[in-house]
Image 1 (cartoon, one colour):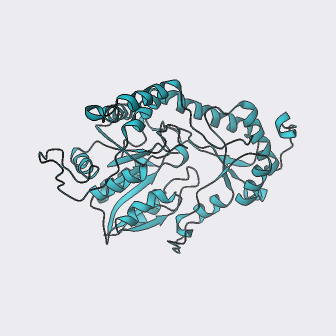
Image 2 (cartoon, helix red, strand yellow; image 1 turned 60 degrees about the vertical axis):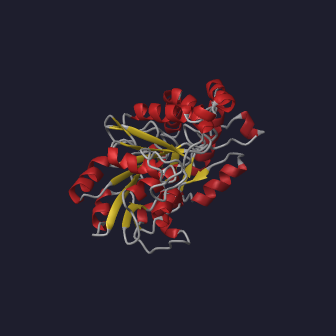
Length: 377
């Protein structure tokens, strides 16, 4: 069997709660798990408000809309991103402005953000990539100086902390993903979080087809909103996963530490945590040295031959056909060309991780340790 790069960890507790939601979560109880999930997630993160959504993209879409982002506005974000981060900007009619990343964390470069600001800049989106954390100290300073909201895309950063603050809790609002590939999952799903009471109320209204919760008339929307609500059954799974979140994050950190130790003598770079931060270690990533001659395509081929799934580092958004913008982002382009994500699902065995290590070593030109019996078969 192939070694998967990711798959969820679902236990008996999640199955128990989902079963209860299926059997009893209807009528007056149709939001019981949804309300519980939002309450408990806000408590875990240390924020005032949380709204469960059908996706992280939906949470970001509503949050940006509530900030007033629209046609004629600009939103600054890293060129290294999945399209889910930029799609809401486009849907709202605003213009995305791509800037380069830091070579250490692979996250938004604050110095380039400052240079990219114009009178039309309405928001800055900081994506915490693969669990690595953006430089929130400098980004928050820019946000305060210019009065531009800083948004955290924490889709990949559950469990990451920045000088004691949890990822997603530091900006005007934060968003999370519970897609099936994430450390914590509801199958599909997301979460909007904020400490801003007024922003919360606007997003809460938008999330329910524009119906204000103070409105007493049935089926009377006050504005045109969205339909990004999470299902109660999904929220039941989320409640079970949240009970295990420390274990789930801890296992991800163990897997990253294993790879870091096993590959420490090679000429390559892995996920980087600056002093004062802790990565949730969602996806271990290897950046091969330029001297190795290893490309993204070569790495994918080698992993495929070994029966192992691997994932590419995100392509620069500016290269996508719907954008194709001539932007100077040499670091984003360089790292993407010689980088690969490593398998890191919760129940991956040490034997399987050693097989992954063998492939990386072959690519990097290091002497083989002989491989595993499975690899030889």
